[in-house]
Amino acid sequence: MSIFRRRRRIPAGLSPPLEAEERILAWAYVGEPGTEVLVATNRGLWLPPGRRLGWHEIHKVSWSGRELLITPAETAAERPGYTVLIDAPVIGFLLLEPGELPDQVRTRVTRSVAYTSHHPLPPSGGVRVVGRRVSGVDGLSWAVRYDARTAVDAEPIVEVTDRLVDSAREANTPPA
Image (tube, one colour):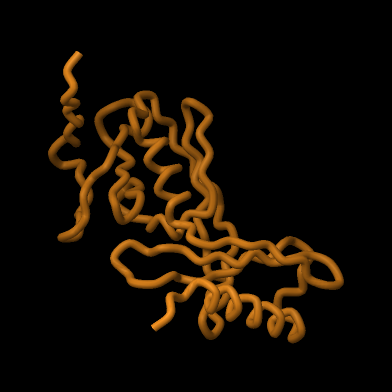
């Protein structure tokens, strides 16, 4: 066994249009080999047919051993200093020869989360405040995800959420 492992090269014509500083970390065919691939890069996950989700744009990832399930984030509202996110529909990919792709995806999504904290909100529900690293961007991107049954647009809820995000941002900003 060699101590030098050669990475599989992605077939010509299936490589996504990478940015100048973007590099491929792992890839796998979707379904039967030949036509479509999922490609993990340092910037995000390229989905067929050529759309990239940044690591910070993926809420959840699960791997069954054959199928990779991705739950993307979808913007519900923009508020001063943060974004309100909801789960977009789950996207599934059958990977018969996954290689390192599922591990790279889980690792990259997890590493993008720099801060997370859940807070109960009256009268019922709650909010998760999340600060995420965005590849190629300084600082954290702030977002919230409300629990079901939370009155997300009620003025008292918005005010409490604003304070929670401000507090998290302040606690996670290095002194100048």
